[in-house]
Image 1 (cartoon, one colour):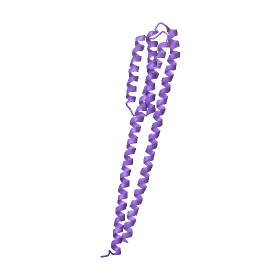
Image 2 (spheres, rainbow, N blue to C red):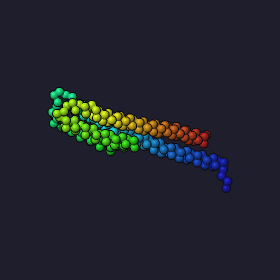
Image 3 (spheres, one colour):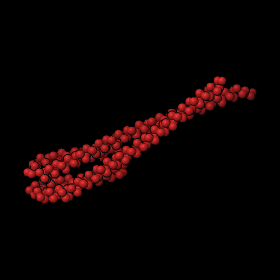
Image 4 (cartoon, rainbow, N blue to C red):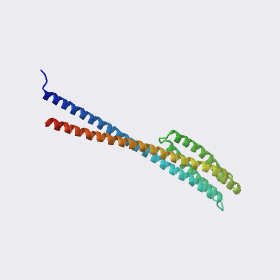
Length: 211
């Protein structure tokens, strides 16, 4: 028995609607995946960029406090108590080590990891100079000042530069994550527009079938 034109038309309409609904469901699934990706990117920006940046700010502040404390000790007249200065430097050094450990546990790019290793090496050199200035040259103020202005200043400058480069890398990677987030958002806009179009097509199909 040959199907009537009405039956064939109804079958095509039903198949078209099922197909369009399938496309809508697929686009919704893709939208949810993209939304999840955006959420992950936002979380990464916070955990792997903002928090490490805050650690770098604290680390930079601690290093500069060490330098200021040492400057006061070397240049002040009369020279401050070496015991008090040494204890203060020891506290700041422990703070520095703690911040470096925390920063090393975050998600680092290859370049950031390399810069962190360089920073640790530079701090070892600078801390050794600190020790010489704070303990070994107590009665040799001219020699202290020469070491502070010479090797000490050069070592501190290298540390400051490395900290600046680490901060710059943090911003660059953060910008890349933001760019990825914008791409995901634009993709969701496209999927949303597709979903709206498909809903309109279903509505028109139903209207056409009914009338």
